[in-house]
Length: 317
Ligand code: AMP
Image 1 (tube, rainbow, N blue to C red):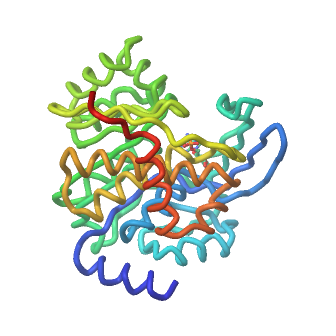
Image 2: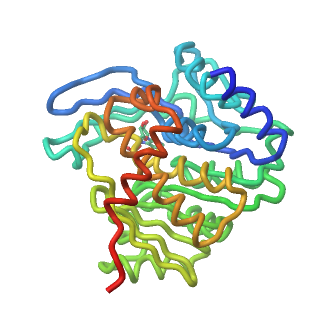
């Protein structure tokens, strides 16, 4: 891991870092076969570890005094810069959810914002010239607050969820005008645009501000839209699903992390970013919390990327 630290240091000096904000949580997750308490979770945790395979990550978030040191060590092991992590008096954000047998339908059992309720971060000076920004799922007001402190970002990706469409639609609409790429799942895209067709929903979202929209369809892959771009990617066929929590955050973190590593956004890098995102998400669901991502290296990611290409390729007629 020493070489990862060295590489992260060099890349950070070169200005290819990715700023990530979002939730940091202690999750309790129940599937039909297993149940685990106080797991490391939250959109920023999943996204940061996923992105860290590609580029140095500067994290912005908050935890309470109950947050285990082992989880801070896990971020550090992945070279995640914690200068923007506040450790406040009080309790860490908590979420609990339960999956049905299809491991797709999920019910939220409880949410406690705790220290997030009063989170009003001031970015460390060294974060403010971030070229790439990923606003992982958290309230659009907080996403905007963080983004407004970044001087001239080159590319801003944001994620959202149905909750914000319901209770913070106006702030979300304002945010859409300031970002380059929105990532959301199919039901959220339909709800946002009040549209049954995903193609029409994707094109409609482009008119709200972002230059690109990525609509995730779970086990059916995803659709990427841009002014002169349309990419329909299949999903990596999964055999072993233990915990789907955080798959969307890992997809988005790896997507943004790959683009930050390349330093350029064009149809080719965007398509590759979608596949890298799918590959990292496919690993993540193979164990609870961030367990599986602890056991893989970039070599595993490249190998699955290669298999993905083989499985999806077909000849011209
Ligand atoms: P996903 O499976 O990609 O939807 O993300 C799951 C993660 O989202 C869990 O680790 C939760 O801690 C986190 N989460 C759940 N509800 C919220 C919320 N309202 N805001 C931010 N993060 C949340």
